[in-house]
Length: 312
Image (cartoon, rainbow, N blue to C red; front, side, top):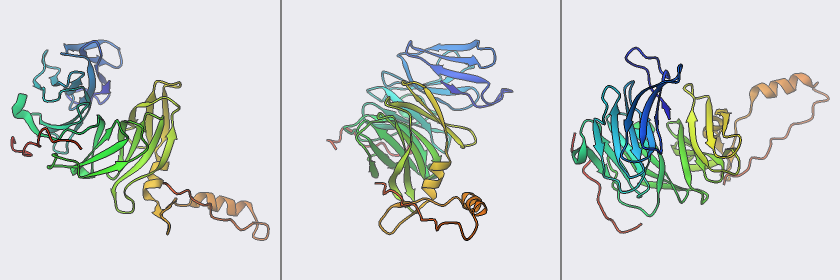
């Protein structure tokens, strides 16, 4: 389920779009809890992305993507190019190109203005991995996909045939991603840990900077960022099911410098230093030692990417 953007006299967050395993998509009023719209899916809903005040896309368990406008009872566009479940959806910076990851190991890009095969802009090569999540970074120039094998695949926008880079992490599936900045993401994995990852960052390039938090032993199913970017929520089957964390530590890690041996050197807290100075006299105050920072430590081509934007 996702909150809908504002529009048509409705404030942002006033309506909630949802897609369920029972094969229905629905729109509900948040204040009253009443369902105000419903449509039948071809299979259980697995991914949902709000696009405007009245439109949202749903990816189902059979690989079908449907575009709904709640002013209509049926889908206004559909795409069926994926052969396995659609795991996640994201929109490009042009607000017309819909990106979808699938359990069949592909990344697909679709033109929202065209239904059916003509709407397919590009399809990546098949890989021996299930893509479970994605996000668009670097001001729309990069697409990052999280996989079952714990690898982040990086694609360049406009050249989706094959990944251009990868970031290898612990061998736990990456089930969710959330963008913190244009060159920093948080990953949620099957081991219950969230990690800070830099993507083409000027200081760190492509690197797993370290652990951000632990939800528990259960896999992290979803990550969500607050509208002001200061809080991130994680969802898991374990209890408590929802945890909320400030993103301050992630920002400090991405802004940190590297030491001579490659370790991440976190910036000091000037306010804390000033407080300690006020509490102690010059004679009694021991010399403070800098804390040591821990070192943070394909297959046969079945299909080539379609010509990007050839359909536009």
